[in-house]
Amino acid sequence: MEDIRLNNGLTVPAIGYGTYNLPDNEEGMNAVISALGMGYRLIDGAAAYGNERMVGEAVRRSRIRREELTLTSKVANPDRGYDSTLHAFDKTLSDLGLDYLDLYLIHWPADKAVYPDWEIVNSDTWRALERLYSEGRVKGIGVSNFMPEHLRALLREAEIKPMINQIEFNPGMQQPECVAICRGKEIVVEAWSPLGRGRILGNTLLEEIARRYDKSVAQIALRWEIQRGAVPIPKSSNPERMKENMDIFDFSLSEREMSDIDGLAQFGNSGLSPENIDAHIAGKS
Image 1 (tube, rainbow, N blue to C red):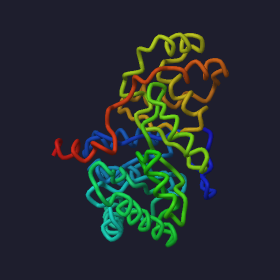
Image 2 (cartoon, rainbow, N blue to C red):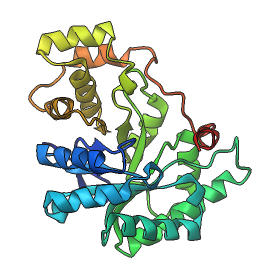
Image 3 (tube, one colour):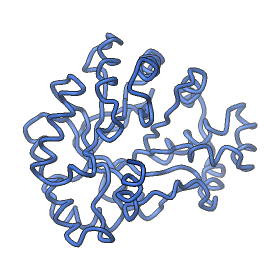
Image 4 (cartoon, rainbow, N blue to C red):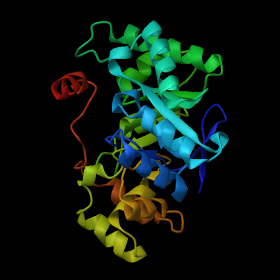
């Protein structure tokens, strides 16, 4: 498997395994253990997923050496801010049963549509991540779902540049402005919902390209993301799909195929955004 080098020199696997919506029980644990057994070494998690104790136990049961793994968590929205982020990090480490994290991200930015002081909230949260990084408690820090205005505001105040921006990214949700800013600042894009939550799987162009390579549409989408420099984080508890998602390093899409996919209209987005995420979460609670 290929590795991606972040702007601080840290390398991460080119594809990860997402734990969003995995149940906090033996079923979820077995899914993570299976993923690790298949060769996934980047495990993407978050405090908001409510399953970090399970993920930590799965890592221990896998018996894979800790230094071989890239483990990620994220600051939950209610924990934004300097002191609360530091406390949240301590709880995440305790729940995972770890001494350090590889990647720690701000899960969602405070947005001007909801927070009059959104720039200060994001800056204070980032200062906490910078402290954790400077203390060596996390190897890399970054953000998630930061759109261009959030990135620009944060970069004006940050002492340390984010290494990652994890955004919704797939052939039907390409976010070119955000991706361009990340590339210009040497911020690696991680792709959540890399398969558009299934919305892109029936696309005729992707189906045509998939037939050429004897691959699935999902594999074509993931390969496109990797060739665009992104790190996709697919999530599945189906062993066959988990294996399929990893089997994307034995072919490359042509420049023409990449360009054709680049030209697809937006059709794979979830509708979630920094403007509505707090209300969305509140509505689920």
